[in-house]
Image (cartoon, rainbow, N blue to C red; front, side):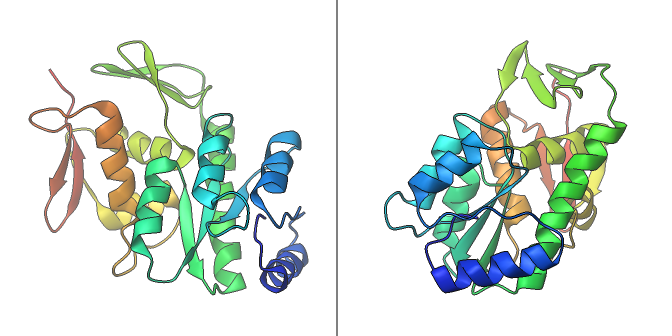
Length: 222
């Protein structure tokens, strides 16, 4: 947990510990980077407003070296930080001041999804047009070139590919890929879709189509 507010960090750390988590704490970006990169971590909770290195810059450095899942702590109502966070590679966010129970629920959902994937995925690759999925590596290749995706982007794309040609409702995609319910005004899923479109190329017509009022559909390019 990388958070400069001592009172909040200690409160959340105590609560997480009471729920069975082993928590390492850092009060600034440099120490947080050292902890995340130097020790065996499963997930990072990262505040955006830090005293030395901006949390988004910390996220950029993490993404340059690791695919560790990252949940951002953001100021309530600051949509710009959330959008940039997703563009840089965040997996999820939670606004501050946050409810410790909600943070635990978000952490557990993300960790369950990762554990389920590691348990159920087989090594056999799958091909969808110009994309090749390597489940054993949790990697996507486009025309044999690796596509750098966050863990959540990978999950969203996996669901869409598994239902290629059909519409996946936003409520289902949110539950299957992010492990939680879709809430009103929550643009998390929209931002992950936007990032996938950018990373996979601006096709015409788009390979990930928005079906208004329903959800999204993946079209395999011909």
